Image 1 (cartoon, rainbow, N blue to C red):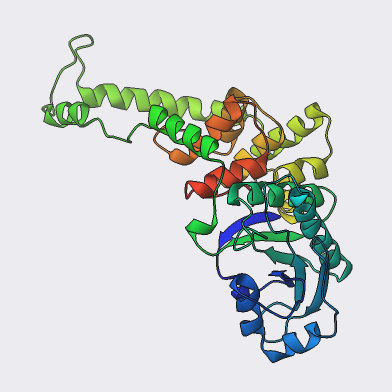
Image 2: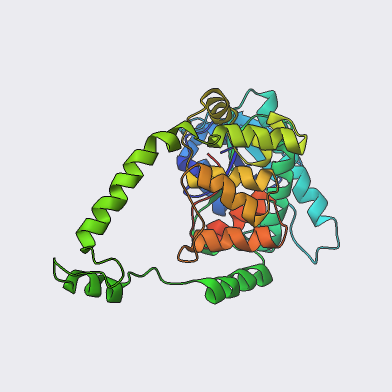
Length: 337
């Protein structure tokens, strides 16, 4: 998927560029900054000394040296005071400037930390919101794989009200998957020659007759196959009056995957991919169920992932990136490829 939230050590990310949350000197420091300098080796510090520092909200690029990444993009985030001193604009600039540098240097993949959310004190939920908004806007116009790298769970936080609302919705709707043992025990206790009170036929005679009828009609059913998932998806895109690119970008789906779906009438997508397209097309809950059915899936209240998806759809929130924030917070798989 073009934008993915991952739990990892950013110094171990095999991408074209990683972003360093640096200070204005660019000479190293604590947190992510210090970790990147240590992993890159002395060559990085030597190059940084030639750059003349960096202003808050701006970004500069160097080689990656001993890191798996080819480049390090250094950006200086704002120190959070009270949110009334231009902090958001400066933080937005950090992401835009970094993405611009990555694009200008031919990077196809870039990994960000949550800039300013450590010792600089920017509230984590607000820092995440800024990152998601700027990166998602960029990806609507550009092709790039972008990661937001979270070192541990404590480094990640969505809005408390949103988290509480979703948790409550899950509690209200979650149903443990179960098996109807009562029915099964009755069925298994029936003697082989048990007679139906209505027909006088044995259970197995009735079943054999039913199976015979089904076999006879199978050929007719196969002749009446409905449209496939791929056909329905393309029809929905046309009905919504949007382009293919607008659809797969809003779905957080890679262009190559969309090409496979378009080119193969029998393509079998994953469930998160189907839901990602439903979100991009802003389908109702019933329409989402219909699209899922075409791919052999359904929503269930015994699945927390499904309940979270339902939570957003019934509220008319079709922002795939916000949905992925919530899914990540609840340790669920994300929407996209």
